[in-house]
Image 1 (cartoon, helix red, strand yellow):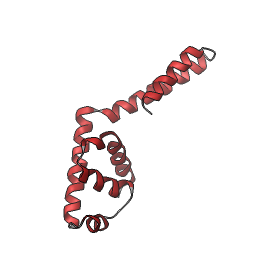
Image 2 (tube, rainbow, N blue to C red):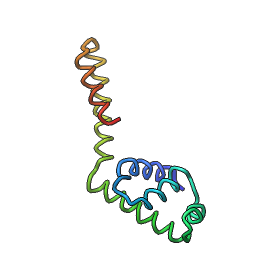
Image 3 (tube, rainbow, N blue to C red):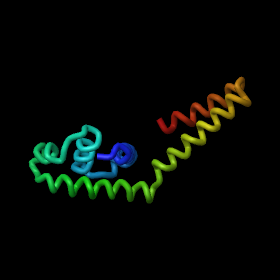
Amino acid sequence: MEIEKTNRMNTLFEFYATLLTKKQMNYMELYYADDFSLGEIAEEFNVSRQAVYDNIKRTEKILEDYEYKLSMYSDYRIRSELLDQLTDYIKQNYPADETLINLVKDIQEIDE
């Protein structure tokens, strides 16, 4: 399994898990977060390995579709990059401005 794909699926799962069914959430969490094999998941839920595979593939597509339509992850990444730039700018140009520093911290806490 590619590490980049695993990381992306785990991240998309964090953003959109509540939009999935319980079974989709369980399969994805076991497969991507807990590194269970398809066979192990199939045994756990008393279904075929193929059923698990099909469910995971459908769920991956669903997560990608949610991201395409809602852009929560890409928006988060952009916000994070802009906040990093703003933080650096403040440190260089306004290091003593506590109000500005606290406002940026408040914004950063929203996404945590």
